[in-house]
Image (cartoon, rainbow, N blue to C red; front, side, top):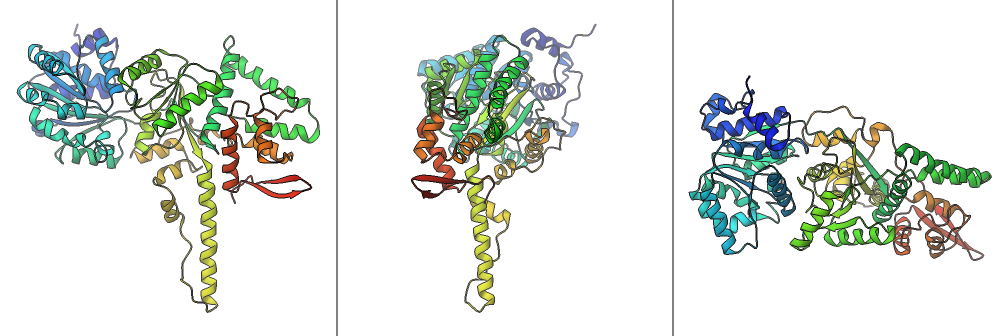
Length: 580
């Protein structure tokens, strides 16, 4: 009986009973290119190579685009079992390099690690190991590879396969703050590998063109692309006035549900939670009961399942977010991760989160890219990523085990309210100028600005302004940006008809309409720690009063909340539920 040697290798070393078609295709391309076009029946994959006969001299360039969880790493970890020589793998992040080194060690591949800070003795040891061993996998990053004296050794040693993982970083980072990425073509020329493969999970047409130009210098590049969609990830946008307040409220409610349901099924815990809420509602009378029911509806927050990653825009906000959640919620399973941590701190945090089933990690983009923690259930973004590709990449950290997961984007509504107000104000001014012109008054004739030009002036990335609004399906917006075909979706908030209200506004609205006096009084009332018969008192008991003040100030600044008049020492508020 015929035994497929590659599948047998995958089963023996990686514990896999099958390979995906795209994995078979990519591995076949690599093995055939390294074999120099000779017969490769000894490791036949029972699949046709993507290379055409007339392209056999161009097989050294390959871009592989497969979604997270599709097994990209296997495509370059398995082939070294079938050829001798060095495989060089370039990673963008130390956290990803460490994670991959741990995985390779578990399947019998002992990688050599080249990174910054190594002593001369360590570098000489790596060079000696590459010369002595028949099968070597060298893991590195662009900076270490470019600066190291090991480059000269690589030009003399037989390099079979040169791999660039997370290749989209060449375009997104290489042209800005990581110029060493632009030196990769020079290093590739020196190494003269038989095969060069770039891997990424997300690549729009612009990113593909950038990789072709910057990495392959506009030479022939074969593109192997799979379906980028991950149907098990549900996408949702959570409108908020203050991202940290919203985050505290959502995680607080979710942790209470988790704690209540530790000894129950999820369904029983949910029923118990809402029965308690509506029992309290029925004890009220008249208008108070209606107000309370409205408040209950406003507290419809998304369930935050753990393990969870919270992506923050800066290092300082990452540390502050972790400290705030840990100190106010009393939940010890919360840590932070960013590029400013020491190597030991990064290693400890990576190990803790990888093993944790209840952890919440506040991180910058320095964590997560390609890290293979399969059971992450929730990914939260405090603000949009720098690019749509980065957002898709980071959201793809969730649900790598194929089980349901969610990607939540907290969207600051003050941006939209301000934009709407300014837009209407400018349109009014434009028509006023037109009227003055008709009346013979000298004025510059200006037409009302279109939405397109106006939006372009108020955001650096128009994509997220469109993505966060209720226009169509969020999943298909992401697919369209990547140049992929539309897909059927029943797993985003718009397609399922789930409308998340602005977190905390329901409580604030109820407190304001009940004529609480000044701002300090409202804050004290909503953030009070003591138990009270008043159903609204202590609604924000997990939120520091400083953050609550900031949330009310923001509502005032955008015109959602108004302090209208003082009468007999009493302050009357106005609350707008719709955009001006």
